[in-house]
Length: 126
Image (cartoon, rainbow, N blue to C red):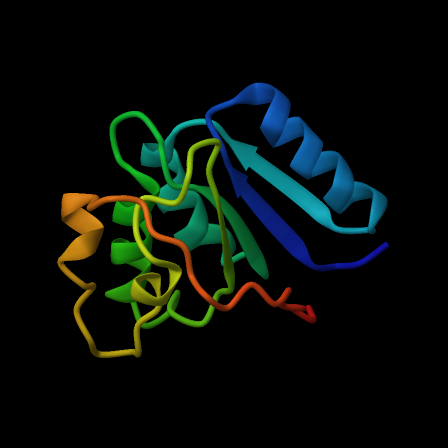
């Protein structure tokens, strides 16, 4: 069993449990929250090794959580896998930023759906 922790922030129960089971089978400790508000406190207190984050959440969106993490130096290096039941609301290239930069304006306006031309899978080693 790994001592690595994955935090799943997902408001759809079935999707959250699917992600959680995949992580448990792989040996990770799993924390789940279905609401963004307590997720921010949990990220700060637990400092998980990986976050699986739904963007389209009621109330505080996943983008707001990313914004919060970006402005907290203790959280900026936590890898985040962004998921959504809907098509991505912004180009993937716009979702990445460097420490010290503000989030792009597109994250607030949700422009038309665009696809990234880079579809290669990425491996994250924890």
